[in-house]
Length: 532
Length: 57
Image (cartoon, rainbow over all chains, first blue to last red; front, side, top):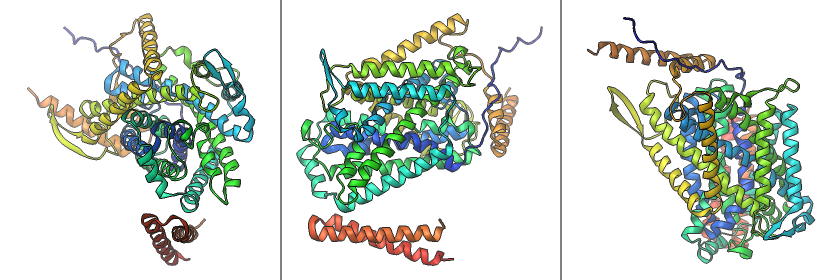
């Protein structure tokens, strides 16, 4: 009698992506995404966390640093497009890969909607009358002009991406440098010309945040750090990913953390951060950095319009990265049969994934409409931004939560893959005859993200309903699709991960890692053969 | 921009900002931590200029 036939296994298709992203390119790719976040988050967090705004940024920043280190380890070990969804698929299986993917897809669609809203918040700095163009529609105070601008902006993004007009790397890098220099000038000028340490203390003692306010503020502050995912999204196009990705990730963590903390401390020493109208950012949640620049003496008259322009452009490009990342993610998900291949269809006329672009940008349009028609808000506070940030925070924390669990699981399930970078603080443990490094900092990161996730659920009244509803709806569609394809709805499709990993390392020209991997597998197989 | 020029620019900028902070502290802010930040920037600027001197082509 012959041996039973091996179960059919799937492998990863050959990559069509060229590896030409350098250290600087990888850093700027991440910065274009994460660096834009402070332009979005500062005002919203200040309105929520009041005098404790710098502490809210510090709390979120600590969680972000651990998320960043986690991504640095996983993206350098598995340098393949897909990011968090791929790590979850490897570590936890198809269903969790899909859950992480759907949470990240929610984030990318919200990224398109929210960042376009904020980009026009900055552009409206030049149209001061726009803030007053509102009408009362039932219980909703509708900013109709801002809504029309945002919808036009998303349509431009769809047009650009369908036609295949890309923001060139050179322009992206140029704008990134301008943004970094501009932010540095505002921070230095702000601290040396207008910042008042007594006002920081006064805000802290006069307007302390309640526990609920702080939870809301710190959970919103996490959005100022979302975007590290983009480094792992381009991991498959990065040269020597094992060396480059940890460097760029750590550089990005430090620089973004520095700017976020600097801006929040600067804001606390420039404005009163009380509740409602007593808050310096009241009415300026759409253009907080330009608002700060405007209040700096001497340079303010020039810095404010320049900041508004740079902020508007960089935030709009970040919205564009939402469209690009959504197509990369759906490509990866459909490759692993987590989404129908229908999404991967490339337009014959434009050679772009038209369906993905139109569907997910269409979702962003619906989200924008729903957000703008959400009851609440006033002429100076925007309920649309509140709803979109709620959802953004939910998607990010859900995705990160699954990625942290994947990191810990992969240390046990796949100890053979070489990890050019390990998260610090590991305890060696013996597991099934193999020594594995248990990630203590990974557990702290998991706890930190879990606390932030609970804060999102407890303090975001709309996010706690709409966020899980999105994931559940996507999950139902996933199960229908898998049943239709006669694939396991909850279980996994057998895949030859080892062959896939070898090919990925080969394509990345990480020959040392490949040799190390093959040696580890040979040692494992040798040990198995020795067993009685 | 050469490493020499970059280090020199950073050093000079730190000295200017440090002086500005000390001046503002003396005239307007009157805060010890703020003054310490100014002195720290002066020291940082002096250190970078010293390093720039070594990097001079």
